Length: 220
Image (cartoon, rainbow, N blue to C red; front, side):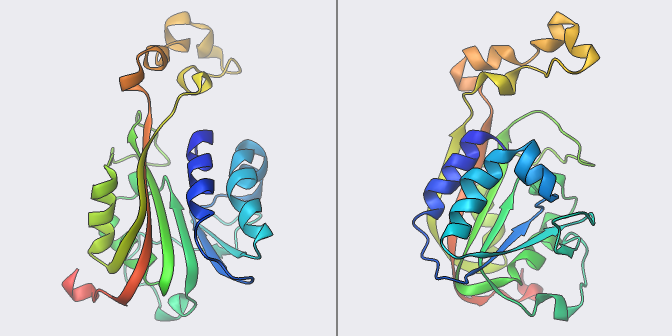
């Protein structure tokens, strides 16, 4: 996640009414070290502000590791019904959809966690290079395309949508900690994007409020 992306998330979530004890589901959260040390802006801009408001987190990831509460691959169909018994006031899913082979299955499962009147926040890269984890389908949606995908499985009202442009230079050059980065042409392979504003990396983001009723899977 980009720093500027996390700032945008912090700002729009500040307007979401959350009561003390509100349940938040973080999908594709990775482990505690990633959230707090590798990308500390996730904790500083998203997790801590929500925790300060009394939110309680459940972290989902496909890999079992420290700080993962539920090991689950939402891209797999026919999950046991009991997994979805608990409903959440806020679901966060950031930069996951481009790594999912079947987005329909994934989104159908995600919305089964949704509480009526709750919120869903989704981000995905719109302009960014291929990054396999373990795959990258090159899904690069606009905010409206994210809404359309979500709308196949749940009724909603859009609360916020944006294209977040990434303007920090460090995201356009490679880390000097890797041997190949000492080759000048490779080191600055994407640096031109920083200087030409229209070509900078972009992230699509939406925040929606869940309406009444989940769209039946047979109709999706």
